[in-house]
Image 1: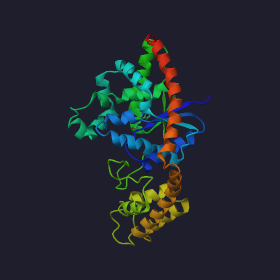
Image 2: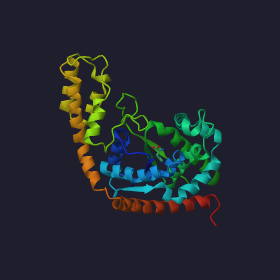
Image 3: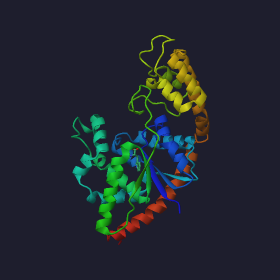
Image 4: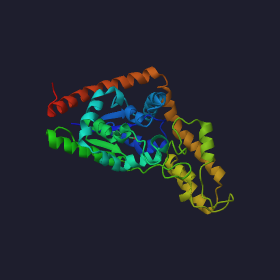
Length: 333
Ligand code: TRP
């Protein structure tokens, strides 16, 4: 029997190259061999966007279109909307008895995020909401609701998975063996760096290339990408390893061109402007088929049907799990 994979994405913005190379590309390789649930985590997105429901709603569709454009096949993957699975909310309440507030406060992912969201949660996290602090509990509900055995995640999500496993163990030790303990499937592709050289490409960092970026946007972004600061003149020798233009050549160009860029740059036979122009072309060639495919899903109706189907399948599985859980907890009236 196929193993079950569960993963999720918060609908807070379009997908960028960091999402693709860091996660989605890996999912494409998994979709044939696993029973795959892909959650559009709108409830989780609302924990730090509760004051912006339109943004979350719009991005449910945007992210789904991006995923389909990248090649996620809705006939193989159940793409579903978290808020439409009420069992996840029920499980979250049940699990909240099994985790201490101080354990949540110590969760490294939560801590980092609170520190990043000072406007919302205060300079020292003094305005943290119950909902945000508790989102790891809700994520444990996401995973266990579908009996997810494997969870493909990046490094930053590991503390959330560890917290999920702790909840599972506690649940099973009190109520009897009911829930499945998930394992991580760490993506071996490293984090994608930003145009500014930052270790992480991210929406909030303003250093991302989105898969829906048009040619003009790509041109402007790549023209402003960080290169070797010691290279002043066109024929100066430079170090491609500290140049973001070379870094993206390696992601989207072919091997011959990559080698050419590298050796010419080292020998001082390549100006940065020319190199950027070539990257713009390679980037557009890379994005073109993705953007072409996205056009098939422009109509929200098509996307709604796909989400409806995925959500119905997810609901079936969620019903099974909740009945086991309620029986174990002796609340199966
Ligand atoms: N927390 C994840 C993120 O921010 C999204 C997510 C929600 C998720 N539920 C999940 C990831 C379950 C893995 C498993 O990207």
